[in-house]
Image (cartoon, rainbow, N blue to C red; front, side, top):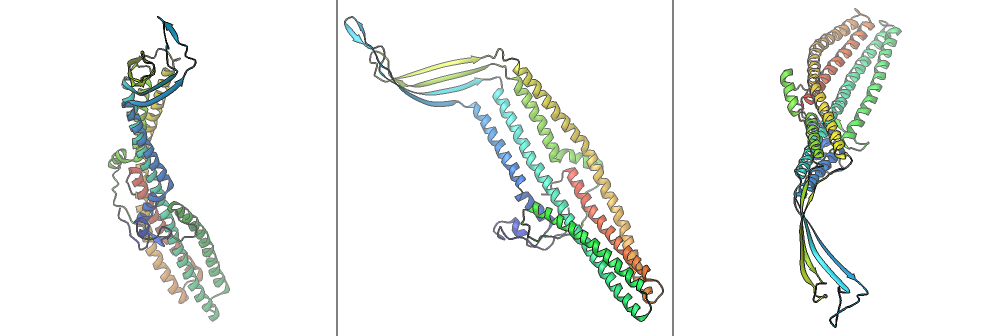
Length: 433
């Protein structure tokens, strides 16, 4: 999307080695605001840690394919150790000091695919974590856009109000001179002052709304409350086309929330399959080797020994726990599928609403442009005729008010057009960060 690039020092916040970390920019563009929010907002870091945790979980599940090795050692003192007499000789059946050290190896040879399924489940969760990070960035990016252009719109609104107040103030001076000359009345002066007071009251409301908007923008940017950040740019139109069918198809393939919902379905399917394998048999191999004493004829001599064995585990009965686990997993899988289907259905409506909003804003702008030109011509004509004494003061005030209203309508239409385009990009899944 083509957007105006404003002047400012916010770029130093985006590139290492530039402005110091504590220095606050005095102006920034929407692109810079988005990049800063995505780079610094805590929710993004939280999602990144979730991705790291999911990667570690995959490694944990993969480790089950390797053997488990342990080194063990023990010493036991037994007493008393009564001797046994046989054939005129005396000997002990076991030593008083017993030493034993060995290495134990356990390896699962076959488990009916449980380990592989567990790894698949962990990888599916990792994919979901990555998609979740993209969803978080997308939400923050478009939230930043709304706050940015909201602040920009209110600043432009203030400019229009200030121009209205300046014009009314100039008109008041003219009216006061005409009153001194006897060609105007006190009512003309009073009515003009009322219009000025009304405009100033409206300006106070806009100033308060702007302060609230700036608070939200600073919160997103992570800036101190006393920092002054001025959004710079314009209300530029996006070149994104308005073909609903093609936009819906694009949205179905690239929206991060859709990807996340599909990953949730895949993960639920794997979990259901994993639950169904709980009652399947498994085969394991156990090996241990080391050294110990207690062997005849010299009970105190330490000798090498080993143990090797294979075990088969076949679950028979666990109170139907596996069946209920499968039922729970299948129910969760059905929930995930329903959510994905509901989200896919809403995609078309999201795109249609955004396209309709963009088209309506374009029509409003075309009409507003004509109204502004006509209102400006009417104001110029009213001022000239008022000075000539052809029209009344109220005629001039009405013309000034109509011009301000037309300019505000034009400004709001341009603002709504930009917001509509961003809503369309969000509905389609355009990556703006």
